[in-house]
Length: 355
Image (cartoon, one colour):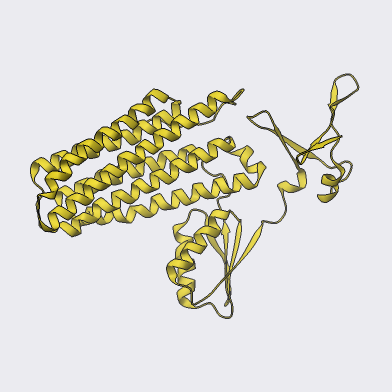
């Protein structure tokens, strides 16, 4: 046996006419309570390596995480803590307070369960609420989550611009409300990736490599940021009130919005296809849009009061969306180079289609 840098080396041996065998490190076997006759599972990986795990690991009780919280916690702080616990990927969350849980704390926990994908209230006591993940780590392929997020973000941006041009508060509020849907998909994808990184069995089921998990997580974060800017555009309806946007400026902002939305779609398409020239075109288009933005900003600066503020917010958000498309394009280039550098790549069950 050889050992180097934490790796154990074993020579392949041949027994009988065509069977190859490799011995296992004794410490690894004993630490997992295994003995002769127990079954091991082997999962080939796209990078040519192989993951080994014992049969017993596939079953057993769900992993339980006890979360101690305080009734004095700020509601936003408590919600963020629960989101972090959710992303960590434990199947059971036992949320407890010292003494009786206050109605306010219980309301935050219940609201959290309703907003997330997966958690359901399993049991409640005076001091605790137990949440169980009923969907598991891989109910949806990660590329499908990215596709759904893109569809929602594109629709939010389009509706936000409609609300801005028409000064329609009801459409603007609908855009703001839909931001939660994008957030919950992003958190769900984060949970999937975190669970896959911790458990090789889960990683094997999602049919993605570790670099691909990182790529999609970055893309998800970018799409979530774009949704935030759609919300910001919708928020200008309240700022502008009855102020009317000059027709020429409104048309220019509409064109910028369409260009930014197309850039995001093209960036995701280049990510799917590994199309480096197309990704570079997205980055170039983002730079062109910035130059156009400077001209519009000079014209907006000549306006007064709320109109100038609202138009500047819209202009800035559209520029940020274009640069987020540029970020996606850079992710696509990195991904294309990483795939090309691999010795081989196993086929994928699903890719992101063009929107």
